[in-house]
Structures are given as C-alpha cells and as structure tokens.
Amino acid sequence: MADYKMEDNKWNAKVAMIESHMESNDVGDMAAVLQWNLTQGTNDTDNRKRYWSNITNMFATVGNSPIRLGKASTLPQAIQDSLNSVCATYAQGLTVLFASHPVYGDALRARGQAGYTAYTDGESYASAQSKNLRSRLTGYYNNCVLQKGDEPQWDGSTTKTGTFKVTYPTLEVEG
Image 1 (tube, rainbow, N blue to C red):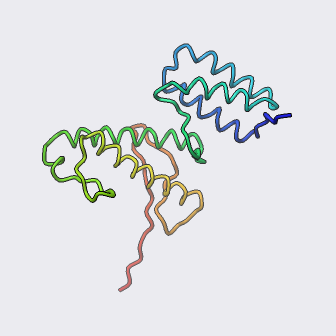
Image 2: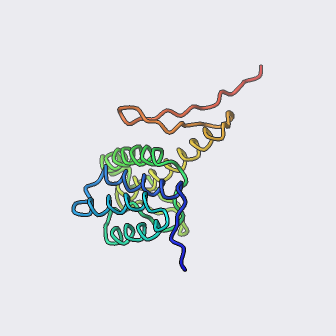
Image 3: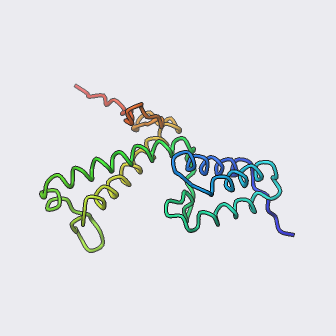
C-alpha cells in the first residue's frame, strides 16, 4: 500500500508557503479549495501527500505559483517573505534607474558564456541584480544563524520602510 504520510515540519513549511502566498496574492475562486486542502492535510496526517498533490495541481496553470520546480528553500517562510519584499523593491528601483538614461543600457553588461552582453531592458537588469542581492542576503542570514561573527550578518528582519540592516564585522587595524 502506498504511503501518503508527510512529516509535520515538512507539511507546516508547505502550509506557511501557501498561506503567505494567499495573503499577498489574489487566488480568486481557489481560496476556499486551497484552505480546505490545507485544513484536511493538517488534520489527516496519513493522507497529506494527497492533499499536497491537490494543491500543486491547482497551481499548475497559475502564472505566479509559489510552488517551484527543484529543491525548495530551507529558509523559514518569514525570511523568504522578507527576501521577496526587499528584492521586489530593489528590482523596481533598478528598473527605474536603468530607464532613466540611455547610458545605463550602453554601460551595463551581463557576464555569460558568450562574454559580456548588454541587458535588453531594465527588467532583465533588475532581475539579475535582484538575484545577486537575494544570494548575498541569504548568505548573510545563514551567517547570522550559524553565528559567524567574522562574516556579514542579517537577522532576516526589515523595517517598516522595507529596508534591512546588515551587520558587518569590524576590522582591527594594526599600527
């Protein structure tokens, strides 16, 4: 007989991801069905994989699906939400900057297999830079969790204005 069980921590992470998506996105008619599947999966631990399958099928045709192919992030949902918020703001500002003057299109280049190529538009530039920021902040958050005092750290929090604070180690200068 097939095993449809899912561990509590794995299920709870999936529930948090879907609930976070539902809070920040209009899921329309799917809301009631999503909530029903989440509730049933929380109560029926023996069939959680079935309820999760229902949820993934519902998001299969949605453009802004929170469910991604590949390895899922191990970061807490609150940290992922902070990253999404910060990176969206960052990308929006970079798109405006890129569009503000033609010199940005002439000067900024993406490094790739074919050498350095121009960004086609502000959105492609902002997307690339936002991914870089996400990677840096994820590393800083991991440094904080692992208490690496000699590395930059970010506790995952953001201010009311959407900014964040990275704590950089102090360097001792001899002499």
